Amino acid sequence: MRLGLRIIVLIKQVPDIEKVRFDVETGRIDRSSAPAETNPFDLHALEAGLQIKEKLGGSVTVISMSPRQAESSLKDALARGADRAILLTDTRLAGADTIATAKALAAAIRKLGEFDLILCGEKTVDGDTGQVGPEVAELLGIPHAAYVCEIREITHEWIKVVSDMGDKYLYELKLPALLTVTRELNSPRLPTLKDLLRAKRSQVEVWTADDLSEYVPLDQLGFQGSKTRVVKVVIPSTEHRRGIMLRGDEAVEKIGMIILSEVLGK
Amino acid sequence: MSRRGILVYAETIGSEIHPVTFELIGKARELAEKLDLEVWSTILGYGIADKAAELIYHGADKVYVYDDERLRDLNVIAHKSVLVELAKEIEPEIFLLGATPWGRSLAPRIAAALDTGLTADCIDLQIDKDGELLQIRPAFTGNILAHIKTSSRPIMATIRYRVMKMPQRDPSRKGEIIIRKFNDVDCDGIKCLGKVSERRINLADAEVVVAGGRGLKKKEDLVLLEELANLLGGVVGVSRPLVEEGWISKDHQVGFSGNVVKPKLYIACGISGSPQHLAGMRDSGMIIAVNSDPSAPIFRHADYGVVADLYEFIPKLILLLKNRKEM
Ligand SMILES: Cc1cc2nc3c(=O)[nH]c(=O)nc-3n(C[C@H](O)[C@H](O)[C@H](O)COP(=O)(O)OP(=O)(O)OC[C@H]3O[C@@H](n4cnc5c(N)ncnc54)[C@H](O)[C@@H]3O)c2cc1C
Ligand SMILES: Cc1cc2nc3c(=O)[nH]c(=O)nc-3n(C[C@H](O)[C@H](O)[C@H](O)COP(=O)(O)OP(=O)(O)OC[C@H]3O[C@@H](n4cnc5c(N)ncnc54)[C@H](O)[C@@H]3O)c2cc1C
Image (cartoon, rainbow over all chains, first blue to last red; front, side, top):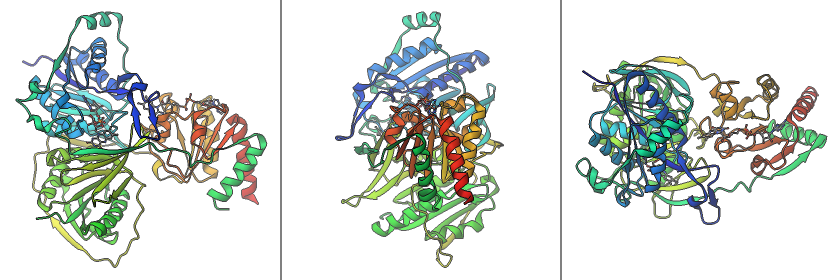
């Protein structure tokens, strides 16, 4: 007999993109300039996991591969209702590209044992690739649907989802499966007081690379295992824009002329 | 044996080839001349075999065709399996796909199966002075451009639509069309049950976008922007809050979690210019911003900034354009 669904949510901690500062001269990203937060898309993945648990029973485990400070995002996930939180943290995991990230996450998922559903964000606001989810699915040999904006139906055996690929498609996936979700899927809950208290007492489990060694060769993880390298970062300046300011009726006349001559070619 | 070609995946929508495919073939042609490689393409689907010649007319030397009823639907496992098998056999040096939602869902599975690096959502590909491929892509919500190199083979990348030049179609171009069989794979884990809705407008292809934000007071006021858009032969775009309010469908959303647009003219009305909005329109040809707040960040990214109440400015502009058009 099966008792509920074993759900895994992958979450990443990212800088608050409204506040982070970029140095145009040096191409440096000053991460210390902005507070860290949970990748906004991942909160929707977590919410979806919690709603499914409430409906069918089971458990929600959150996993993050991050520096130690990401513990705060995992605690927040516990407060929102996750049952278990695992932080993969180790200098040997640092500097990973998406393939190396996916390998570490897939290894951690294997170590956890059997599962039914993995939920990810559509992409992150920093690395911004959207690749980790489908890569994890491939490494685990399970189907995935990307850009999921609606969950129509879920049982213990399968899930029906709408995938937003410009046109929207309905897919049925056999479980276990992986979804990457958009912000249209739901509105994330805020933690209740009771949950905040519970989260305070619960523990984030910390795993290192050694915990994964049974499931993946360690030289395939972190910087060493990465196949892509960022060799340079350029901060595009928008100085080429003319930035001419206009007001009043003069503006109407001027903008009208510009549109007619430059754009409509009249 | 050294690798001899650049492989371009031809994305199909129904039985039509997505135009990003031709742009990629054009870019692949340019890289191929520099690197002394051939350009290969592959097309998968059902009832698409007669489209293969188009890929050659646009610059491919060889096209691998998989025409099979079981490839009609967008089944990511079936399509992945075919492409992984092909890539293992013909060993391309570079493998390019469009950074469409389908391409961005499919490519990472292929990369993981081939255990190779994949660069996301590129806006340029260059050969550096060492003869190596530089992949250039926006990251951090479009705030930076990262230059990326790949150490494994094939080098894989997804490329944004409408950033590469569309090559000339030359129906006299010759090439080789290779018909392949689809070896059945177990793809029962996922079933496409059909399309539930069509995208109503295509922002990505628009030459003019008239966009509105929270400066609009109510849903009905979108008509104002529609009127201006119609006059200019354009379409209406919006910032995210308007989609969240349920005023308009997400097809119209411009930005990081919506559409990336690159029209000749972008008119932003009552939009503050958040990083997430800028990520979707900063590469527009000309940007005109209309905002009542002279300190709005959007003005720093605009060619022309109009400090005005959009409810006064837009009707006057519409009137002027109408009068001039009639002359
Ligand atoms: C400027 C820049 C450009 C980069 N470009 C590339 C590139 O083109 N190709 C490449 O392979 N790598 C690239 N990287 C590296 C990449 O950002 C990292 O591998 C990162 O750890 C994961 O990728 P992402 O942030 O794009 O995640 P995405 O693939 O966008 O994340 C999707 C989802 O996967 C889950 N997830 C992602 N990371 C984690 C994690 N660490 N822990 C738990 N869950 C997670 C979350 O649910 C998330 O919503 C780049 C890095 C930088 C700084
Ligand atoms: C993960 C994530 C993804 C996101 N993705 C997107 C996205 O894809 N697209 C997007 O747009 N946003 C996105 N956002 C939201 C984004 O952060 C901003 O909240 C949003 O872009 C603001 O929309 P706005 O400019 O319309 O509204 P506001 O910031 O409220 O600006 C309204 C502007 O209107 C001006 N105004 C008011 N009245 C008038 C008037 N009568 N005449 C002229 N001007 C007037 C005001 O001065 C102000 O500048 C995202 C956010 C997150 C966290």
